[in-house]
Length: 251
Image (tube, rainbow, N blue to C red; front, side, top):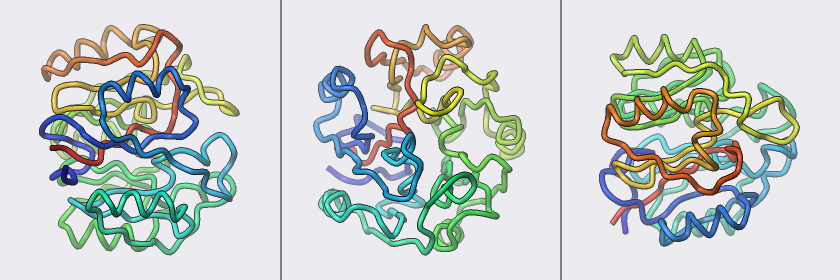
């Protein structure tokens, strides 16, 4: 088992994944049937209740084998991540309170590119992105990772117009969808497509609920088929925004 060569984008079957501890047990059981090792988050104190368990609010993977995380990441979670072979680097900013103070680690890393709101991102994150040669694109959407469903280095799905335009400018193929108001997240009107998905292999992507409950499910399915990617439905319920399913390791 080893960290992914390209963050968030496995080149084979995923063997370890970082997920919210608030994932419903039925969904967790289905995911356990696919992924041998699931590391569950612990709440990040200071964040609003609906997102304090979300993986994409707690850390970012800027490069192979490196995690930059909130200073108050729970020590037990940090140890489990280290056991997988990751180097852990503490950021400077502690996510706290409401937007935009909660987003310093919410970054969409897509191959050699990174999309983030640079005004509020953590400085250590920016340093690691630059050090590892990522092209940094500023976007106004602070919940960048939440807003981006990553399929591979050349293709993503988003409902954010700013991210759509920035990604197109980097020659990334983008499916722009309307906000999916059927994506559930307690305390908010609706959730994001990126926060509801994660690759479980190079050719399979998991949805935290039934894909067909999404308003744009047909166009999403066609876009997945364009890249030979099969959707995996984790249950028959409405799709939940759980802060991304973050693939960590492959065989």
